[in-house]
Length: 400
Image 1 (cartoon, one colour):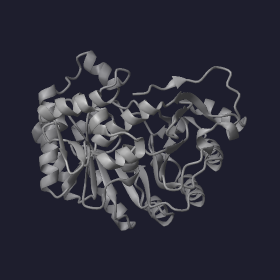
Image 2: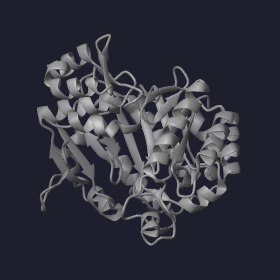
Image 3: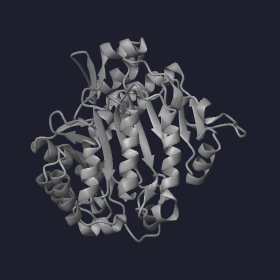
């Protein structure tokens, strides 16, 4: 897989010459727009995404800079928009609404418009504004329905806040709601995890994402585990919880369409499906990434540096890497395999010019013999046996 490399020091490209945000995307190759709002009320103990306290910054000034970056992007092929963070819902409601309108004015053919929301920030009027401005999908960061687990994670909401947020979102007219859940939280058990799953299902969301807790070395939670304050869930229990999620959610009518994602029929996340198909995407804001298919960039992961660059009419790009044809092919294979449908052999040939059965002949043969891959109806896909150990399989497609 390609690694992002830092741009050469002294890069004096202007904002309008920065390349990725003014790239031309073929009209038949739809793309997604990701907007990173790098603000939180407070940082969660496990979070390794770039964000800073909203109280420490001039939010309006940053949004003005992001508008400038967006104005220069070619969004003619954008069909899905995803506003994440951080926590977009921690912005002043009027500023958030104004920024949403900027996006809808710029992108004219949006089919799916998602905004992430912290449960305790789901104010009725804000939700109504978002819905009126064309946001048609809400992703609520529930994480757990166990208050002790939420406290350990450093979340600022409780379980009742999630229920209230879903109710208020329905009242505002949202018909596509996703809940994020985390399993293998320190101190959790299969019983507490089952309770969270059942309480999530009871709220009847259209989509549920279930992720194992990732412990990044730089985070407070990882450091507390290292100091012996908490004990990480063991690998066998982690795997059992994942399999438990699959069984519980599929029985409840959710299709397991991607390794960590479950949806009612027709409510798969279109934006993320574009990512798993390795389509081009545009990233706006500090730390946001973009990809044209041949080049990947990442903006400065620092609010002040990002604003200074934009206001000086300089490129906000801090890191760049060229994507070789082979890297692109391998990335496409890995991303496709994350989904239930896996690699569509005919489409893969059309997009890359290569037959995946021949190009990846050795890993395909090996993993088919192990019962981890299956070839059927012109598709190569992970078996149920492979899902808990997907990384073991996918790493063999990451490079040739």
